[in-house]
Image 1 (cartoon, rainbow, N blue to C red):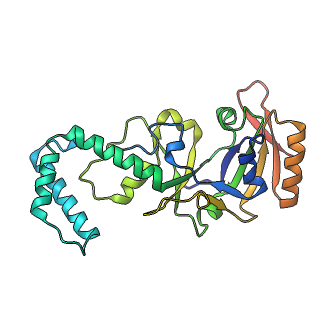
Image 2: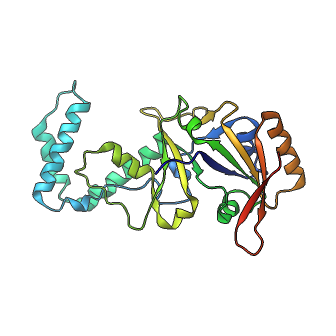
Image 3: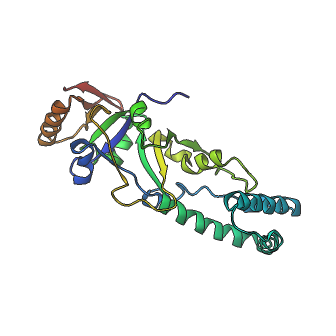
Length: 265
C-alpha cells in the first residue's frame, strides 16, 4: 500500500506547545509511556509458545549465539549460561514478567515517536486531538519529512483484531521491531495513524534531542477547525501567508456526519 502524499498532525491552537509546530517549525518525539493506549508499543514475546523441551533448547541456543555476536570480546562460559537459562525457563510466567518489565522500561527510555494521521476529516480526530474542532490540522509532505537526514523509519500503523503473537524463537528482528512499534487494536483504526520512530541507544535522548526542527517547505497545508475562533483564524492565516502555506476552512457537510473544506489562502 503506497504511503499518503500528505500526513496530518491535529493541534490545539490554545496550547502553547502545540503552536510551536507552526510558529517554530518544531515537532516533538514522545516516549511510549506518554501514549493514551496502554497496549501501544507493548507487543511482547509470548513465552508460553516455548511449550516443549526442544523449543526451550532452541531458545537457549538462540540467546547464546546472540550474546556471542554482541559480546565477541568478552569471555563466555556457555555451559554456565545454558544452566542458568534452563533453570529460568522452568517458570515461563516469571520469564514473561521479567521480559516485559525490561522491554517496557527500555522502550520508554530509548524509543521516540512522532504520530500523524493519513486523513484530515474524521470528526472523532478533530474532537479528540484538535480541541473539539476549535483547533487546526497541519499537513506535512510525507516524502520530505520521512527522508529528512535525522529520521529513521516511518510507516502506517497496522490495526489488528487479534493480539500479534511474537514467537521468542523468531530471528527477524526488523519485522519484530515493526510489529512492536506499528501494531494497534482494530478499535483505533479510525485514526489511520502514520508514525515515525527513532532509537536512541545506549544513551536515552535529552529533551533537546526530542525536538525535531524542520525547514520551511515541509508543511503542505493547514486546515482550520469547524468551530475555530475568528481571532485564532486570523492569526493562523497571517502566519501561513508569511510562510506560503495553503489554508483551508473545514465545514460541516449538510445532512451528513462529515466535514469538507474550502480554500481560505
